[in-house]
Amino acid sequence: MENIDAKKSLGQNFLINEGIIEKIIISADLTAEDTVLEVGPGTGNLTRALVATGARVIAVEKDHRAIEDLQAEFSAPQIEIIEKDILEFKPEDYGLTEGNYKIVANLPYYITSHFIRNVFEEWPQPTSIVIMVQKEVAKRIMSKPPEMNLLALSVKYYAEPEIVTYVSRGSFRPMPTVDSAVIKLTPRTEYALPVEKEALFFAILKSAFAEKRKQLINTLPTIIGMNKQGTTELLKQIGLSPQTRPETVSMEYWLILVNSL
Image (cartoon, rainbow, N blue to C red; front, side):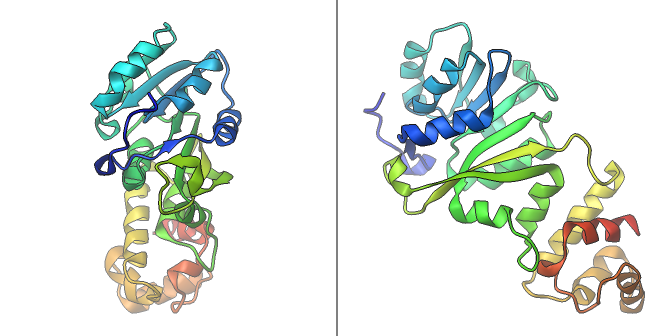
């Protein structure tokens, strides 16, 4: 399968570094009792290692050119090769339910945010997600005040993130223009807000981060339905200055703010 040429339109870069593959497998912590959803098996380099763990593997591949070779090599009962766009994939159709599967993904980078959002907001939650992302995206996800950002807060609301390893661009064929990182996301078993307040939480975050370095007093009043005086009093009540900028605010304070509304 190594003779498949990567398609730029699909954002393909095939992982060829065996050491990185081993780190992904160790991080995924798979046993024969597990079911793992692999996204983008491509030439099957990571798939072989996943199958070797004894886990049940559901491999979803969009590129029609790879499907025949994947099906020819992986014919064991424990693996199912599915030709599908992962953004249109319905886990329940394949028996994947809350807490009964793991995800391993070497995604095209241009769908990373969309995929993560789908998993957290629409899918039954997996027990863990091990995913390859751009190095800069991984660093943004791990950000803390005073460099907090919308992506970090969104991911950390749903999961506990950690960087497994950084990956040089030479670990792929063809070589991408950026370095990468393997991150592990462990979904939370319960969320910090009641369901009815989650939409408000994300609306507030999007409004606050819509304009860089904007003070809270200039972004919050409209979204929370208060005038500036009321917003000022609320912020002071929870221990924040009205002049505070969103990138300096921790998750704890955002949750206190939403819970106070």
